[in-house]
Length: 561
Image (cartoon, rainbow, N blue to C red; front, top):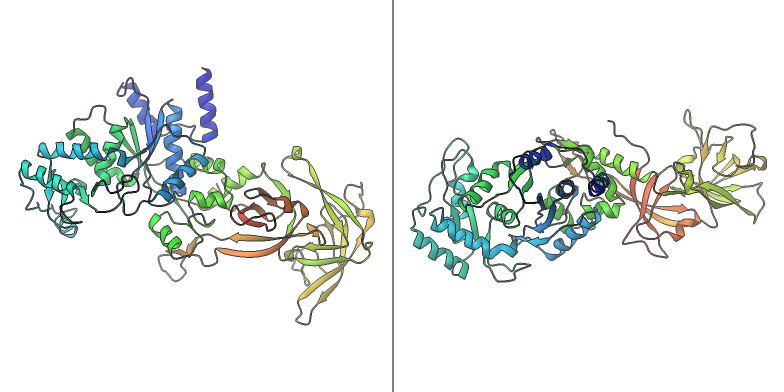
């Protein structure tokens, strides 16, 4: 019982505590005794051809938490069957992402670990008369595959003898043929209503160096052939895939049935995550990286897990997001505002608040003693009083936010304008008396007066003001760089279908002034900047001498249930 309670606590912290249709299928299999004596076994099988993105986070959470729920196991396995696109950089990033999300795999494996077994299985299919070597090119195979309404055309090489196919396949492995010269195809049914079953390619030739096996192989298995074998070899019980693999399931089952695999895994599909105002295509994301449109795979605008981590998102927020969107059997898009809502909800009780002014305007308090400073008391987190308070210096010269002053105020504008009195947070009431400008009409500074009887915390209960603004003391202010982010993709206003294009205004850099405590900020430390939102000290750019902050998310949510 203690173990079950601990397991439930793990699920609660990692997400996906509620049942779903996948867990219902697993419950059916357990009740039927299908995998008696075996633990429930899942796997997360990324191809190491790019960095993982938020869509992969959903699959990671599902596979690992399912294993935890059923006291089972989950492998991290690299589907590395395409050496041209794969790299150890991507392998390392995937491991970092899975760990950061809070999960631990039972075994770290590679599809390439099984290349010998896959080759032997292919030979068994040939010897059963279920596979043959074909000389048709990729374009010819495509042309003879048929359509949804017309059957395909059999290859002229489909009738080769078993002996000839064995010899040719061995010669393919030995490197006798050039790339594309021959392939190994399954012999199934060229008239099948499922095009994936019309003699699909099982092996192709590629004289490429593999990141794991080097130059040991020059033939490589296709994903649809390798995938079921990887699962079966590892004794995976439930192969959880995204919905595009539903039409490939008959081929998955065919491979294992023809090889007479006992206790074959069960493939179950779920809808992939589509998120508005971004893109989930590794190919397109790679283009943004390669052409320098973004800083790299971990650019904070990117939907990659590395990008979200650098942006300041928390693993807890991402897991909660994946839990709350749930699982579906039909594709749909989730609003990015909901992801932001989850991040905001997670941070609001975790981080301290600091004063930072944007588009700064100088304020001089003309009746405040020159050379004098005093401490104003600020709460660390309004939501969590237990987080205490801290002191901020107050003096004759201050910086305020540019948006907190209007020379000609709009209707219902309660902040600072000529003749108006406002409360300076944690300090005094100030009244704007004069606006100083340069020759170009730009505001240089504001001259104000303060009422010494209105100090915050002094018990003053006299006149009231409608506006309260924040500030930083000019002499001790810390200059910082703030990077504000828009969405990576926006709708193309010139496209009648409203397609999304890269947002050229997705990054705006600003020079701001912060209270002195910010000078001690360490890389990856998060804060709420009062009235602006949540920010993180950039992991790459922040140093002891220079502070660079990435906007995580704003304070106000536009998401509606």
